[in-house]
Image (cartoon, rainbow, N blue to C red; front, side, top):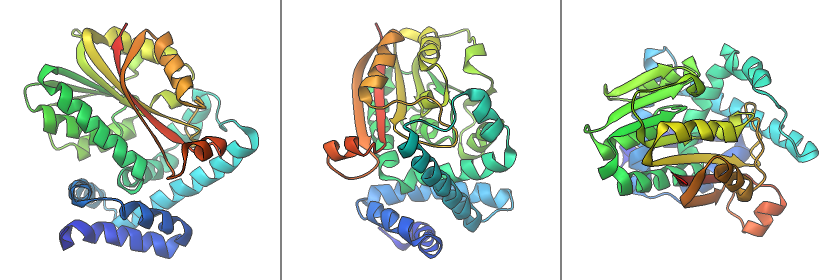
Length: 304
């Protein structure tokens, strides 16, 4: 890897080390596992992000502070989770008041999540899995939908693989998320819609739907999946990700293990064509399950 590919990431790690030595050990360990392809992808992403920050009059230092505030939140939520076995928020109204309708919280949270995409090993591995799935299905995707686009990384990757032949729609309930996605996605083919997916009724069905890390944010994940079932073409595929045992300030629905997720999938009328699971910590599965270490689940679903 060259100096350009590592300089921004090195700066991020150095600043985290100064401000939070304990967390920097984990980040340094994560980065040691990655190859040149990772640093190239991370660098491309961070370039776009740096432009976004500059246009908003912000700096990378601001973003790092946001990330560390998010880590502090996760640490607090984790302590509560281990003590009670539950997430601190139980309803969407709670989370809406606490996070989504609280601009100051939403601001640092969104910027923190942006950096986590390339600082957390399991986030990056899930991205690679997504790319693999899109590559396998690209020839059959003409109508693509993403629900909860977040920072726009996944739909950007999909566009890069599928190309201009497809129609791309992005639906998000959060104005803040949608604005960041618009700034991070360097393609004018995407149609952005600020709406609740339950109130979304498009004319055409979709060949491929992506919904990353949304199920844990709702009270009734079965109902959400059933809604996506109505938006998917008969031979279409739905790609989802959701974590188990992942306390966060905006997580509501607790999946305790992969079987909990599979149960919801089947109840909603889907079969699992392919799946991938990875824990957030590098340790034996038995130990990870014993200590309720968060696991990220990714699945490719088809209609029953």
